[in-house]
Image 1: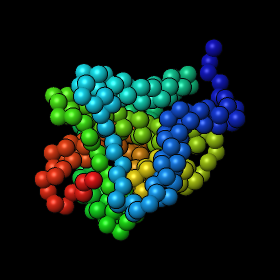
Image 2: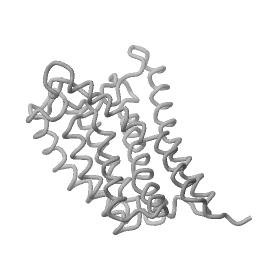
Image 3: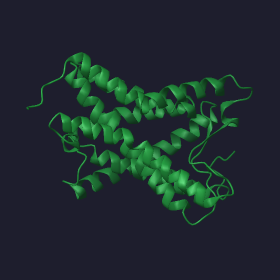
Length: 255
């Protein structure tokens, strides 16, 4: 039986369910965390937002199991999106998440990461200095053999989850729902900013701007592949760079 286009209501409900199971829920969680931070005595920069923390301190093998479980389970919404596209008669290829253009994706992604990475660090330091951002601690894992591989896997997981859902899937569904390109761009960018609110106003604004740029690039290239590469490189640089430099250079804030 040929696939039939679902009603607008079904598409809307499907989109809301996917977001509720993934980054929409993260946005609500980040908002609650932000409210807690701004109502806590003291400035935002005196508080810390920790990513990639130990899940079982003092028990490295159990910690590793929790880290890998968290990374794998976070990708389940991507599998759901792949299934929904397959049901539609398509695949992740329709949003450009495939191995069709590996060298082009790598080159474009690396170029984007180089530009956004340098400006992003400067913006974070300025926002924190002005008191608009918490001190972001990209990693707080124990110094064990699996630390850096887990940080790399975590970075790639973040990139795949966010770019597939917030750019590729969401823009496709909003287009099918009749949203204008401009409105869909705003929705995607605001969603990206929302789940970074736990970092403070700076995290929200910086990622909102990044969201606008990524949507523009996606529409220009028709692929999320370069965006996944760029996001992976940005997060690898942040996670691994912090692990290597924290406490060794004066310009990098630490708690």
